Length: 261
Image (cartoon, rainbow, N blue to C red; front, side, top):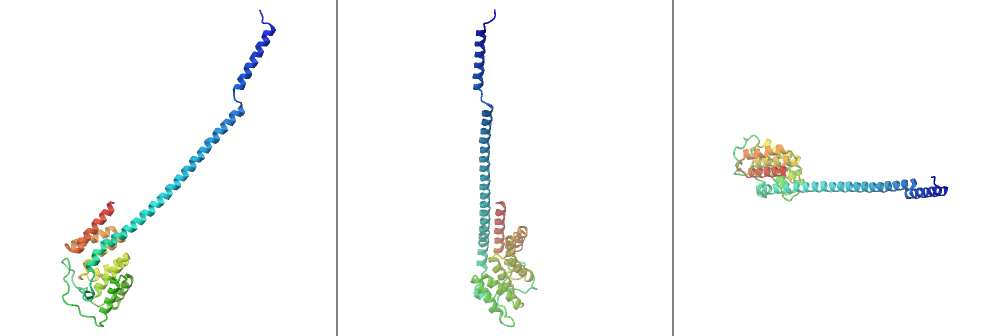
């Protein structure tokens, strides 16, 4: 028995209605594209924000690194100055001569044999003045400049002294105090040359042991660490039990601590 035309018509209407409802329940293609674009735009903005934050963090790290490097540099300079002053103050105070002693240093000529004891014996009597008699006054003027902490002037005057009075018995001491004047102002290269001249030309001078010690100090100041250690060990072995040997041992310990740190 076939369905009546009326039933077939109702069935078609119901099918069309169901299709319309289903179509309306699905988002259109335009809506789907818009949703995808909105999602991509949101993710893109998040990526941009993340990149901006990373760039800012990198800039902050760079600034912090620069600050740390500057602080390390400043601390190193302060440590070097403090070490130089600390290591030098005892030596300078123990070796500074009074004005009366300045004119009567213990020195031997360059041809004298090298000292075999910790410290060469001092000259019992004042040395005779030089032929022209002006060396003592020139030496005293240079020494007074150094005692007054006019180190540039004293170095210049001692240098002029050794040139003008090469035969004076005060020449070894002049080379030593010239080196000290340079050393105190951290002109290590010039100080090293002065101390080395004293050691080479006047090995029997009472100042030779102090000059050898200061050569090691200058080498350390110039970052010539291996040479400095060798020189300081030479002071200890050549002048055992002396104040300079004790100072050399202290400097070696300080260098070892610095290297270990």
